[in-house]
Picture 1 (tube, rainbow, N blue to C red):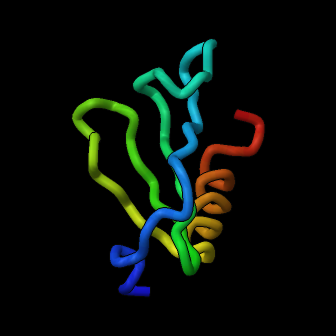
Picture 2 (cartoon, rainbow, N blue to C red):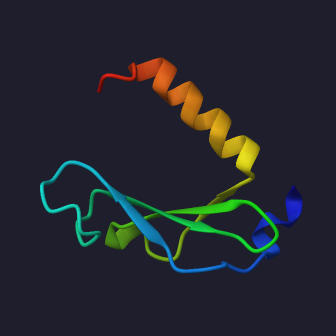
Length: 77
């Protein structure tokens, strides 16, 4: 899906946070996630150094990554 970087976001980024207790999306330990029009996802970083940078993945790619990561670290973490 080489056109993922040409697609517009279909909404705002949501923050998926860890490493803190407030989990309100304002921490620097968040991964941000937004859906793309036409399918796929944009991943971002809440750290100031990561501002404006995105990694884009198809639904199949992000699902495969998530499954692989859970297998690697174990579902209990």
